[in-house]
Length: 430
Ligand code: EPZ
Image (cartoon, rainbow, N blue to C red):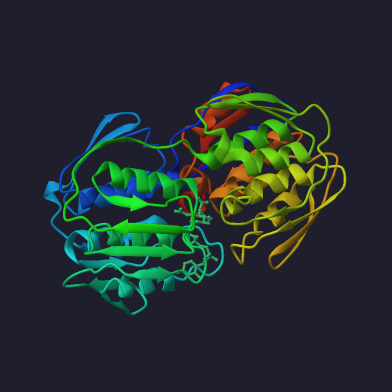
């Protein structure tokens, strides 16, 4: 077991480089098996554990996965030889279910155990299944544990999503690119990672149009080929460093970003009194006084991202005044509030609403990362707090933040990763 120890209070200063986007990388890795060829994927955040698990699944079903350098991987999908993925492989992450769409697209058959991932409330997959069925697959869920999908032939279809779902949009795209005829996904997700996936599929010879709008049209093609592709920068990692800069009253240039993807975050930081300066592929964030309050409502893109809600709540916890945070995507994304309150914050969360009464100072405390973004919030809180914060369960943070200790140290943070023995592995000397 490992934990982070942070001595807080120092403003962050300097420059930090953002990695490739996790939530683009995961569907793109699954999509690579649609090509039966070689894909070279660049700007891949190879050291985060979600990406690692996806590469393990690829190898498990027969793909040859070769690390070319720290952030480039070559995937040879010619040797993929199985459509079965067991729970041992899928349990670590949500995105393992992208192999249902990808294997259906490749083989017309997928037998994939239910995914793991952050607990944020109920995470049904009814829209994924509806999409597969409309494309002509028959889908059963065995013992609530394994999705078995089969189709002698996938045929394009209009598909209307009952709610905007990133995962369902991805999975339907993966199954539809090689289906016969036209698929139209209405009420599709518009996140930057959906556009990146569509661009990757098109680089392999697919015909996907409209990604980034709520109507995506896919004209099926018979075959896809290999390609070289570079993943977009991670919007949420960038946003996390932006908030960390503001919360510590720092001044940080965040490099390798697409400022347009950060607009909803920049606007809220500006509302709180931060300065946000945009460059071609960088943003500079600074704040030299106590943040002001502001209200947040999470929405699908281009709204304020739910994956930035916990981090932003840390800034609001330190704000002058009371802010309301309304979570409209997930039913249980305020578990971090108890942890922040242990550090002196005053957050009252009820259902999908939280009232954040700003305090002047947070104080270091032992806390834990309940999930990935809750963990990011704990890091920001620890950096902004006086004294020492110890964060446990950092495996959640390792799922999505590449080189987080090194990057934070590079901008002046006092943070280290330490190994601590599991409580039950300690021998009782008495
Ligand atoms: C993706 O999850 C992201 N994960 C999440 O990021 C992110 O919070 C979420 O999109 C929203 O932006 C990945 O990209 C791997 P959804 P996903 O399907 O696809 C409901 C992070 O921290 N729904 O868009 O699972 C669902 O319950 C992670 O990086 C159904 O009801 O989210 C939710 O309320 C955490 N039926 C809403 O839709 C379905 O079939 C949006 O979920 C599918 C979804």
